[in-house]
Image 1 (tube, chains in turn purple, blue):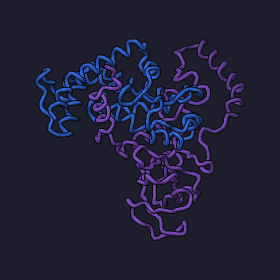
Image 2: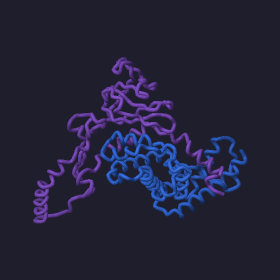
Image 3: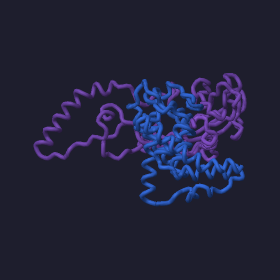
Image 4: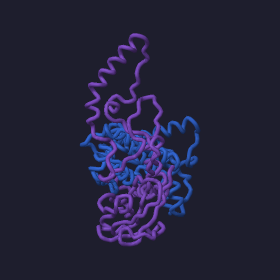
Length: 208
Length: 186
């Protein structure tokens, strides 16, 4: 019997595909993004050499290596500094996250927030159940209410979703459906503001 | 069987933008691929807590290794290769620490409980699925639930096509033998 035509196998596959327990928990998605972004990605030379550590040296050997490293530093520094920033600007629709950078191997990572006093961004998920829509975007005070900045992604179920890193605080937002229709989030409290010409929704983002 | 399973059609620019450091693109990738990833992990490891841990580990590794992702490669097989590895590691860790079968013991063939509703049927599937050797369960899920081509499964598992077909066939044989009676009794 061909397994593709097997009624038992087909029913098993359908049951497993629609398992209700496999519905994602938005908090787990937010935790995932936080975990990914808490540590910086390897960049520049570290990307190629990984977590390379200096071998133990002593005496003359260490002095010679230090001198060579200093010399190499002058040569390489120019090339490294010419690399484009790994943390793009907010204006491009991407979000800088404090704590980025390239710490030396073995040195504890101190989040930039701890140094600058700036709060870390918190991944925040937005969801709109709108199976009939062709395009949904998120507009809010965090993207200057620009409809093209933050598109939502349509899942199989017809639910649209986007996870956006936001600074802690109160944010007003709405969904822009099919480029023209402004829709408040039915699952969120309404704001008294009218930033986009009509009432939006409010999300409170708390620092972790 | 379609080569492009439903729900897998991701914007091909997303992995490239994420690779370039675009966090929003990565968040979109997670939004699109998380449900399928969780489903696969859940059926592999058998409980939600471990499944979420495996999926999180996999995506964190994806984020930190995107520089290794070839621009002309397809993202889903790459993600699932990492995810399948995380599931295997997690199962091995759990096996060492607790020799407990999540879905309980499976009745011998011919003595399956009669399924009177969907819940029984689903539980029975989980029960039988849990008895399959991990490599057969993995191959079956990727082929029949995630609807992947054998070539992609070979890339994910590192196993040859003929061995994969044999794994899927053996898994199907067991499921068919154990579950046919349940269907007949409905």
